Image (cartoon, rainbow, N blue to C red; front, side, top):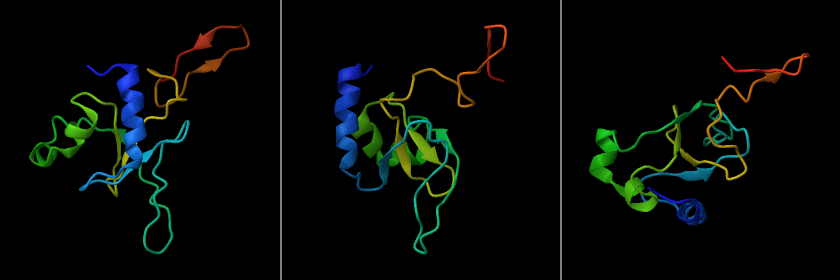
Length: 112
């Protein structure tokens, strides 16, 4: 399992592109792809957690696992397949819907 120190080193290596994948760093709170196509339009696909260890096509390639380790947190656009590494400023373990909202009574309502 990767430690936070090695994950930070892996984030630095994100600037180095993998041979078969485009790798970017997510912005804080980013949920959709911001990759532009040839015409300059945004892709806009949803970013979903990608379990590359279970992906048959990726097991043949193997460059993501070799670069980031077997259990790294990686997100992939559902349309253009661009890979996104998590931003170190984003809180870990929160739901995609957000942290929940604070009620008027001071209680935290969990996200759906």
